[in-house]
Picture 1: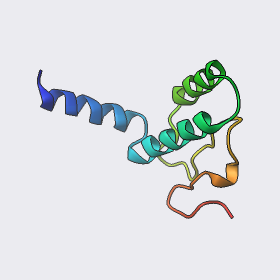
Picture 2: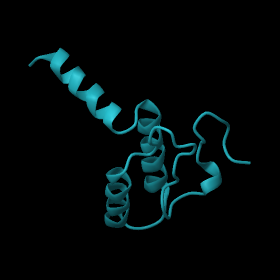
Picture 3: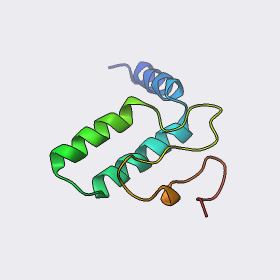
Picture 4: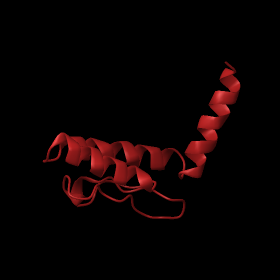
Length: 84
């Protein structure tokens, strides 16, 4: 297996989804879905839906919160502190 090729593919995928900030937003969104209410099946559906779109696209000011999970005020803002 060519590790350099694998690393380049991972970097390309991350860049296509909006970069490291987007990856962090996606992880935070999945964390909120996992801690949210509902059955395992409901959580899996919400997680799949959340990953269909990147958490933060280049040029956007804020990262989107997980739908139906957590409080929007807990979602970190890109380039700034959490909402007050």
